[in-house]
Length: 178
Image 1: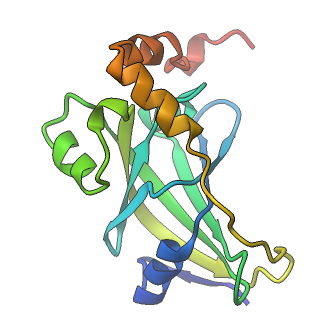
Image 2 (image 1 turned 60 degrees about the vertical axis):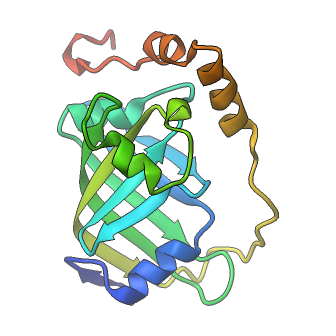
């Protein structure tokens, strides 16, 4: 049977730290965005907030939805051990490279900030757990390093910001052709 909480318990926090894969869903006034995420890219700031390190990629829909006051859901599944699903219902804040706290936050991840697109702070307003009995048992093999390596090379060449600027998803959803 599922349970709902207002904040992360210590057990919830440990569950998050053990996961190698999670999903971010976001929506504002357009299609729902759903993306699988990996890497050591989450930090628990406290029982009500998470920090997510965002590498550049082909889209930036989570930022678009946050900018449009959209909703964010993070979902974690236990693929090993006891079954469980946990969803975090959140509001988000974009922490850009120009933000004074950006460098301090990135240092928590031990990565070169030049290869990072932005950070997201997720303020949790509900935590929901459910059984996860239908989720298959799967074993983690290894991370794909290609995205990090690509972002690092682009940053070293001085072309990362140009790429990020060229691949923005429209923020103004009211003017989209539908």
